[in-house]
Image (tube, rainbow, N blue to C red; front, side, top):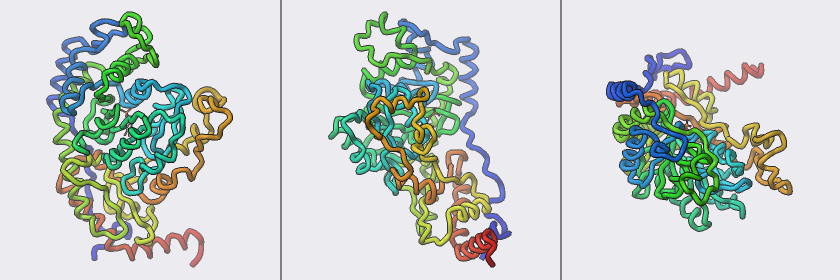
Length: 438
Ligand SMILES: *Cc1c(COP(=O)(O)O)cnc(C)c1O
């Protein structure tokens, strides 16, 4: 049996994988064209034809809406900006509550605080890593206005259940589909199931424009409100004749023409990029399916997972070793980029100390009579355990993961699992050295 890399054997992967490279000649050509035009942004922050941006921005939005079969697509200079606009667009008020997962990128929750509304964390499902429907129900209060559902790692599992809850309770559903573009679920595209959804175009995502984001909705009012928030709404509403000026406080969340032009080319590549990730994820899942103590990502039909991250849940009791040891062994076989997923957001100092605006606990002190919501460790036991102990993540989006690379990663896992006994021995030798016991 080949010796583990960790124990001095030869690693399965002995050449680092190159980073994913999806910017090519066409992006360079179109960016050059925009540069030559001299028009790097078509936006004016006042009510005019140019309130909606230049030709690249508008075409990009139209093409995005067409591909995703949705009425409106609104571009932003980041998806964080898009999330802020989305939360504002639903008419949120200070002190309203929005239910969100704690195990996601920090902006999913910060966008709620941006309107002085209050994030309430519901736990995630241990298998899907997305919001758990039962936990969402438990966190609903009379102040709950919306549910923000991050579709984490490329999976839209659980979305229809959460949508049902939103409908039953009269709540608005925002999908943070940053990691889940072009994923099929319940006969639609993930991101277009809720009232508003959206995607990130930052450098690390499936397709990118350096920085950027795109919101989608079938609701014309939400779309228009997002455009006002994107582009100095307070200076626009009067000339525009806007009657309802709720949350029209605007920012500069506008996407540039170069980025939009690059985005148009990137959008053309999106189906094949996601298809490639899906094939890699499917192959890897097949290779690992018999390994003991391993929970694999859930997917069914074609393109039902975008595999932004290939997350694996470890059943450590079955394996008899710690996650750190497994990670060390996999890294020693040359498997790139393994980590435990997102920090639980409720454990960040801002939530622990309830210090967001100023020093006195605003906006939580809008309801001074209450301790609610509680951000103590323990409120989301599943998310906490997944992060602290159970999950390892392969960032397959960082590399192209062709068939050969996928095969190598699979073989590295098989090798480590074949040597679990050696690993256990290694681990106990480590810990006895650490404690000084013989
Ligand atoms: C990337 C990401 C964001 C933020 O997108 P930016 O474009 O970087 O602002 C938000 N939510 C999730 C789940 C993400 O993965």
